[in-house]
Length: 229
Image (cartoon, rainbow, N blue to C red; front, side):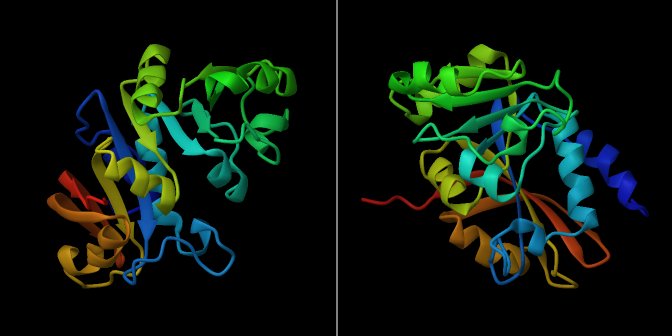
């Protein structure tokens, strides 16, 4: 893994239990997931980006929220289709949804909304790459069921800390791929501790740790979330 491009193939070939949700998220050693502008790009780097592409190549689809897609200005990916979930049914301001030139037109974008919003969302977003999908009452079970019906088995979650913590708390996330971009020579357990705690993870098993030029790539399984009353 001497060059950034090598990371794509490395992570694309990493073991991934299916069916399952794998959370891919970047942090610094302070446990922060965004920087000054509120975007993960503030703390990410080229190495982390190449790892992300590798996971996308291995995934059947990418799940994120409309909020994250709007903040990060998501485009349609040539590696995997997108699924965007929204409580309000508002997908405005997202290039992948609204802009013809924001990625391949054949790359699908699934808009996941509650059953009562399906008709209005279909009327508002009618581009050929859009498909509106009901997730019933919006529960994690209905979310998982909808993605399974699409045919996805390896689901890459790229959401921010709030939605990620929610999925972890509901025991939806089976694995976490956590990149710490300023880990330097810190041990994996120490470098990841703040980020895992801020995600609501009480304990987890470290499956692997790879370090490239001070950026640490960790994989976690057997995740035990904080149980909130």
